[in-house]
Image (tube, rainbow, N blue to C red; front, side, top):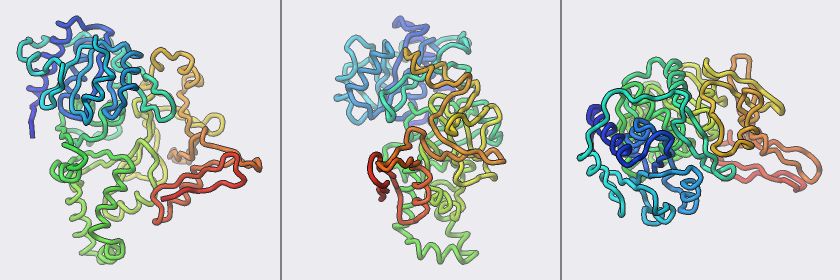
Length: 433
């Protein structure tokens, strides 16, 4: 492991911020980050802000063509390059005129070197003069629902979201985070990067997905976030070593059940986890019940890039499986036409960069339109019942809403993934694995 104290990290950030300014970069200049998760990803992000620039985080598995498109669209003037699987291929997507800075430990060709720059630069002094209403980052969506759009967020929106999260979970203080989901994704950036900075916590970074299980077990995080596919993979790993019939027998014996639960939690690296979250996409409720039997109580959360992931969450001790939890106190929520979930808070984006028309379509008054259909129960728990655009009509004229049907089918332990289709067909069909 390479270790960095807060003092060492702070020195690196101040030196790199000064180096960026010495290159002529400053207020409103965009600087991209292209790397898998590592310590210098966070250091670069903080240095960009300290220098007065605007951060443009990018997915490390992006294609060269998409990379060039985003760099041109964002008008980025520099890019940090780090841990990548296909650095030479991605280099084709970076315009020659861009300033390129390579992280330590992951040398990239034809780049300025982080260590050389920071070693010969005196760090910035004092507290940076930052306007909280100013733009801090442009976060491009993954493009799964169309061409990537640049979501604009201010310093205030980011700080507001983190404060709201920590007020909801006051027991989250000095923690241990395990970082492996892309830091360019708003959920990982807010929980891990901002959560660590706001609380003075420690962050460990995964070496590779091949070492994920070992790294997680070694790290033993106290706060952990995973997407549904990770929970499915963890379940598969447990059942390979302990088939379901055997696990059921052991869990039926009180004393042995306790020992088995503790052993599995320790093996996974979750024995010390006080908060365990899932998000980014819907999760099979049966999977949540399965882990709950092992004493692993997963808190499903809900949010969007457009609101810094600040919307709904299941609180520890008040988890309602099948829902995405209750709204944060700082978030207003309502159901619009077709039961569309609409939210409003100070964490809402300024809009999409250079896309005023698309931005206008995303709002109804002051409320952000999520595009998700939902139901809210008497206690304020939100259930997402589908995407409004996912509805389709069969050739017989019958409207089908896939999500509730998929949810029912997923209650079967025989199915891990289900997709209901049938637009223009006589009958809807379900595809499952």
